[in-house]
Image (cartoon, rainbow, N blue to C red; front, side, top):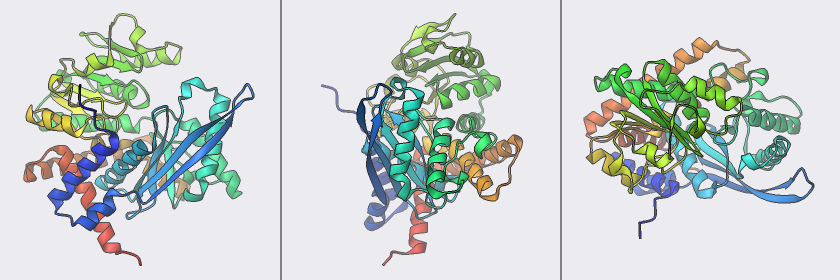
Length: 418
């Protein structure tokens, strides 16, 4: 029988332990960083459109608050559970510290398949979930954002629910909102743009011209779809993309912008896109391409398929797409992995910009947002790459060392109360 794959929480703990060893952290500090600061599990009763009531389960985990208020998305997915949310919250802590923004890490989620619910039902779920976790969130406490299965409309409902309970409008309680209610220019494509900046930094460092590379993107949602478009527009040849129902492949290259338009006009899946060959998500991971962008869910590159990955570069658009077992195999094979807490940090960077704008009631242009994002992403990549060379470790270990080290330093500086 095949060995069970590592869960996201197991992967997060293994990565933390490796960083703690390299940093020489004492056991007490390691344990503090390994343990979420606060967790909330809530029931969400929902009256369906046909009148019957069902009860969903929701979560919010605040992993660490040493460097500032908690920050992290809200996920609606049928596989969401407390361990997944714990892992995502921990990765958010390191991500925020790595790119130098003053947040701790958090994450939330509801165990639900949003495709099976009407818009009105999703609004009722969101408003009840927001009401249940209201005691621990706020613009100075914990600032949610969209994630898998949620979007800017979800954030508008969330912000409105919080504001109604407070008695006045509080735009800064969430980020990733529509522009009309305090959102930021450039937020919608920020994670994808960060993937582009990270990929190009890795390619430049390796002496590779982006116009000479082929790319496969797993996941054609909010992150993967725009990442594919941005990479294509910048000169890369995107040959394969996929979503939950399968993938599309064309060795001559795809037009991601046209595919996004087709999806908005009702195309059920990229797997049915004209002029392409159907491939599975598993086959996409193993394609003979230069750059692989896993931009869906956790654990898609694992011990059982890592030795069949033929990409020279993996740029992680999703959180935790590569397990620690797979990392070892890929490193031995010379595959460069740009880790999630670096590659997909563009979203939280621009969420920070949005929060700052909300607090000041002063708005930036999209060019200002993108320029500031580019500076943060390229600066963070250079710092991670330099440490990896100096310490002779992988980019993931170097990124974890920087993020974990900054959080540990903040904890030491603040001290232990009481």
